[in-house]
Length: 168
Image 1 (tube, rainbow, N blue to C red):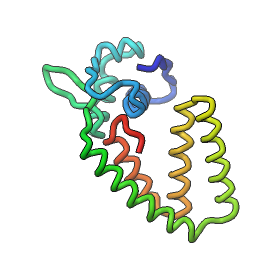
Image 2: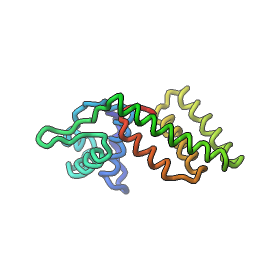
Image 3: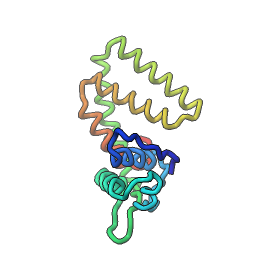
């Protein structure tokens, strides 16, 4: 797990824990099959078990973990078939988004996308993986905005959560 344990007192604790654990799972910092303990996570963040339990429930709803009563919680494993299906869906959506965006893009938007790609390149050179993933997400979200299709981005985000540990 990452060492991030500082929580913002102005934001809901359960949502912050969810975001941190989701990021750690999606980036494979917590590998598939790893057991997750409410007690350990609550100790890590110096909080009670209730917000951790709420974060676990949301992670389970998004298909990232499996909660087994009396047995514990585990990061979900993913099959090759799930990855292939996820790639197919994402490719179909993104190709349609790009076609639509290409017909609507302004010079300013094109410049913004180019700047983003430049920053992605820098992040890779500096091995700033979290920054790269965030910039990549921003790039694809911007394409969906240009195409005026937020639903496409929302669908991609949801499918990404189901493909734990695979950058598609």
